[in-house]
Length: 196
Image (cartoon, rainbow, N blue to C red):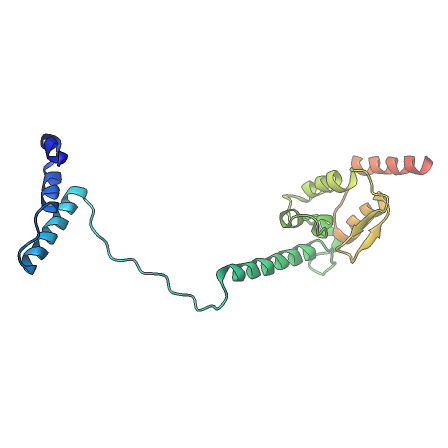
C-alpha cells in the first residue's frame, strides 16, 4: 500500500475514496449496501463525475436485407438518376419558355456520354458556359484527332468524322458554342489539312 506513503500530497477527497474502497465488507446485508453507497459517493466527490441514465439502443431494423446491399442499390439508383438528369440537361430542346438560341448548358455532352469516365467527371457542372467551352476545347478539340472520329453517345452514337462536324453538332444539338479566335484557328487548321 504505497498510496498512503504520500498522504500529505493527496487531496482529502482522494483519501476518503481510497479509505472507502479498502473498507472491509459489512457484517449484514444492510451494512454492505451502506458501504457500497458510501464508496460511490466518495468516488463522485473525488472524480466529479455522476452516472447518467442508461442509453437506449437503436431500434432494430426489420429489413430482411443487410444495410450494405440496400446502400449499394440506393447508390446505383442515385447514379442512374444523376446520369439521366445530366443527359437531359445537355440536349438542346426548343420550347416556348426557352428557345434553342438561349440554351447554354454547363455540362459537357461528350463527357456525360463517355462510360469510361468516372461519375464525377461525367456529371461535372461548370460554373459558366464559358468555362464549359474552355473544357470542351482543351479536352475534346485540341488533342490529336482520332482517325475514326468521335462518337456522340448522347445522340445515339452519332459519328462525327472531323472537328468541324463536332463543332457544328456541339452548337446545334447541345448548345456548346465555340466562337472567336478558337473557331478561326480551327478553320485554318482544317483548311491546311485539306491542302496537304
